[in-house]
Amino acid sequence: MVKKKRIRLIAEMARKIRAYRELKNRPRESEKYALDYDTMTRPHTRKTLPVLAWQDVRRESRLFSLLSGLRMFGVGHLFTRKSWLTEHPEAPSYWQVTKVKVDYTAENMDHGRAWGVLTYKGKQESEPKEMDKVMYHDWRLVPKHEEEQFKLYNPVPEPPIRYVSYPPLLRAMLLAQRQKDELGSAAEEPTLPLKRDVLLSKEYFRSQEKKRERQEGTAV
Image (cartoon, rainbow, N blue to C red):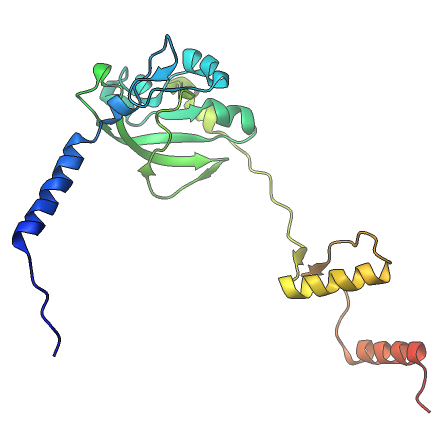
């Protein structure tokens, strides 16, 4: 007979009260990510930003610093990042904002959460999701009159995959055999062709068998 678990009502209530107090005392994002621009430190954690980030912090903007100055908090606008523009300028990467939840307790209302549809390197996702790294100082607004030109992209067709890697065990065996044949020199990485140029017919196997007999010799 299975022993029935005893429910301790007072202990369960105390656990819920502790969880509620922890949630209530948790710092808001406006407190957690607040920044002293004179000393470049965060008052909540007392940590100093990396020196390499100081220039971007002073010149660039956070996402909600831009959203707070737009009508309807920028819903429908396009936003990109400086890092995307420098890393892959050939393909557009941007967010189209669909929903914004502002923290009205923050000063200047420059904190909160935002959702949108991501287009990364010209490939647009089907479903909206929450935007990440909104506290980074590298967000830029795409002006309305430049949106169509910014979204223009002619994708370059990717070359077809002709070779794939061998399974790990077979790859290790082939590398060991090649190193043995080449007397310890660096062996070439073995790859498996996806397309065969030789038709696997009866004549092909007969020629392979004759070639093997010539190499090994005829049994006496």
